[in-house]
Amino acid sequence: MSETEEKTPTNSAVQNLECTYCGKTYNGAELHNTCPACGKVLYYRYDVQAVKERLKRELLPGRVASMWRYKEALPVLWEENIITFGEGWTPLLEAPRLGKKLGMKNLLIKDEGQNPTGSFKARGLGMAVSKARELGAKAVSIPSAGNAGGAVAAYAARAGIAAAVMMPVDAPIINKNETAVTGAQTWLVQGLINDAGRILKANGERKGWFDLSTLKEPYRVEGKKTLGYEIAEQLDWELPDVIIYPTGGGTGLVGMWKAFDEMEQLGWIGSKRPRMVVAQATGCAPIVRAFEEGAEFARPWENAQTNSSGIRVPVAIADYLMLRAVRGSNGTALAVTDEEMMDATKEIASLEGLFPAPEGAATLAVLRHLLAQGWVSPEERVVLFNTGMGQKYPEFMSFDIPVVPADTQFLD
Ligand SMILES: *Cc1c(COP(=O)(O)O)cnc(C)c1O
Ligand SMILES: [Zn+2]
Image (cartoon, rainbow, N blue to C red):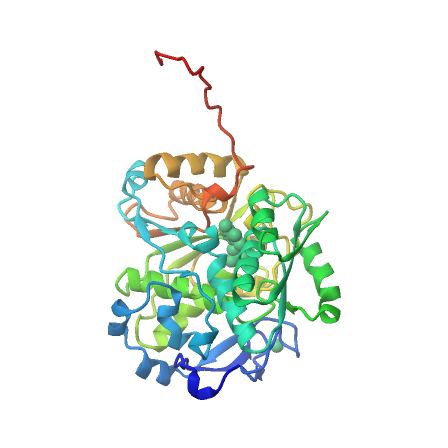
C-alpha cells in the first residue's frame, strides 16, 4: 500500500466487530471469519454520532449512483480500496399491471437483476472482496450455488487477487462460464453448496484462502445491508409494509434488518418495520420449517431440490438471525413449488416486461398465497425482491418457439 498522504479516506465511521450471538467484541481492523468464542456471525458496529455528522441525508441526492453512496456507514476505510463496477442503486420499479391483476395498488419490484454480474451478489461480494483485501487477504475462496461464484470471480479479477470457487456440478451453465472465464480456480462438486464449503474449508489454511462463505465473514452483509438503505431512500424514508425476500443464506434479509436498526439510530427512520417474509422452495425450506416449529435454529434440509439454485441452501449459519428478523417484524415464511415459480416468471415478464430470476419469481408466488390468506391486504405497499436476471438461467425454462422456412410469406 502507498503512503498515507496519497490515500483518500472514505470517512467511514466503522468501529469494532460484535458477535450477534454471544456479544463478544473484536478488533475491526483485523481479518475475521466467525466468532472465535462461539462460532456464530460477527457484525460491524459504527460510531453512530460520527456517521450522523459526516453523512447528512441531504447529501445523498448528489452522491454516486451505487451502494458506495453510503460509504460513511460502510466498513472500507480508503477510497483506493473500493473495488467497484457500480453495484447497487438499482431501480425500485412500480408494477402497476401486475398489481392491477392482483387487485393491489402499491406493488413494487426492487430489480436487483440490473446489478453487475446480473445478481445482487455483486453488492455483498464487491464489499467482501474490497474489505478483505484492505485487511490483507491475498486470495479468497467461496462455495457457491452459482451467482456468488460469478461475483467473487469478477471482483477478485478486478482487484488482482486470486479466487477459488466450488459449486454444485448442476449449477447453471452461465455461472460456470462467468467464473471460469476470469481465471478463478473453479471446481464442480458432485454434491451441494454445503459439501463445497466443507471441501474448501479443509484446504483453505494450506492454500492461504480467506473464506467468503455466506455470513462466515462480517463483510458481505455490509454490502447487502445497502438494500435497506436504498429502499428507505427510494421511498422517501418511509419503509414499505411488507418485504418478500427469496431466502437462501439470508444475507440480504438480515442485512436489511441491520440497516433498519442503523437508520433508526441515525434518526433517518422511526421504529416501524416492514413485515419481513422469507420465500423458499418446497424442495428446500429449512427456514420455513424452523419458523413453523417455533425453533431458534433450523435443522439441515435433507435432499434439497429446486432449480432455483440461489435458494437451494440446506444449511445456513445465520438461521437464528433470519428467524429473529421474521419474528421481530411479525413477518412470516412460506415455500412455493418450482412450477409456481415458472408461472410467476411468465406473469412478471408478460405484465411488466421484466425477466426475473426464478428466485425473484418465487416472491410473487408467495405473495399470491399471502393475498389469498388475507395476510397481505390489497392496499398495503409490498416490495418484491427480484434478486437476479432471468437471462442467467437458460436451464430453468424453455419455450416452444415456432420455426418457419426462409421463404415464408403468411403467418397465422
Ligand atoms: C444467492 C441468491 C439468493 C439468496 O440470497 P441470500 O441472501 O443468500 O439469502 C436469492 N436469489 C439469487 C438470484 C441469488 O443468487
Ligand atoms: Zn460469539
